[in-house]
Picture 1 (cartoon, rainbow, N blue to C red):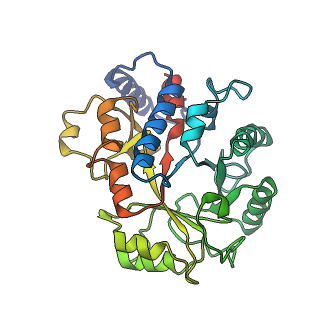
Picture 2 (cartoon, rainbow, N blue to C red):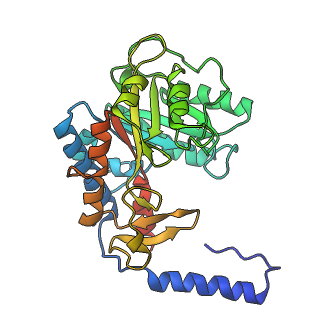
Picture 3 (tube, rainbow, N blue to C red):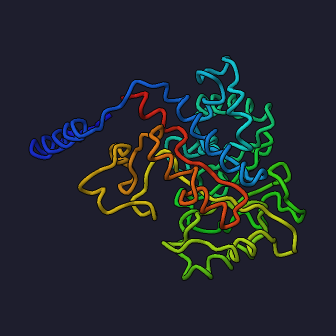
Length: 329
C-alpha cells in the first residue's frame, strides 16, 4: 500500500505513481500456481539433495510456517513430506519486532504464530525464534517468554551485526556438546559482520563465545569461510562441539552474491522479479523456476554445495514466506 504525505508536491506524487506503474508494467509474467506448494517442493528438493550428500545436514526454513499444512490452514492435513524434510524452523518477531523494532508484537499476531510453532514442535521440529528488541527489559522478557514455550531464542538489533552484550553471560549458557538441534539451548544469529576488521577477526571473535549454535553468513564480504574456519568454529572455548549453520536466501536474489551476473542489469533472467522496496539490493524471484533452483542446489556449482563443501552443519533458508508476495499479486 502506498501512503502519501499530504504535503508532498503534485510533481513528486506524479513521479511516485509513475514509478509504481512502471514497476507493474515491467513485472515478468507470473503463472497461476499454488505458491505455497511450490515453496514447499523447493525446500524438499534442497533437503533431499543436501542430505543425499550428508545425511546429518540440517535444514531450517525461516518464517512461512503456514506451509507445514497442505493449504496453510492450521486445521488442514499436515504436509508430511515437507515436515520430514526439515529439522528446525526459524521465526522472527514472535514477541518483539513484528510491526516495529523494540516494540511488542500484538497478542493476536503472537498467538497466531505460536499455534504454528507449537504444531512444528509437536512434529519433532525444533523452533528457533529471533526477537528484534534492544531495551534490556524487553530482551529479558523475550528470553523469559520464549523459554516458557520451550523455544530456543535470540534477541538483538535487526541489523544482526554484532555479538550482543546483554545478557551476559549468554542466556541458558551451556558447556555440553551440541550434536543436534535438540541439544541446543541458545544461538547467535549474526549476518552482517561489517564491524569486524577482517575475516580472521570475525571468526576469532565469535569463536571465543560460548554459543551452542551459530547462524552466520557463508561470506565475510566476498570472502567465503573456509574448511579451516569451520573446523575452528565448531568447537566451543571449552572444547565442546557446537553447530554452525549458514544463512541462505532462497526467496530473493541478492545482487552482492557471487552468482549475480553483471549482464542481468540489461538482460534480466526470466526468474528475476521486482526489487524489494525495503532492501534495494534484493530482488524477488520466481523460486519455482528451474534456472533459479539450479543456482541454489542440485549441482557442484550450486550455493548449497558450496556450503556443504565448506563444512557447515546445515542451512538456514530465508524468505520462505515469499509465497505471500505472489499470492497478493
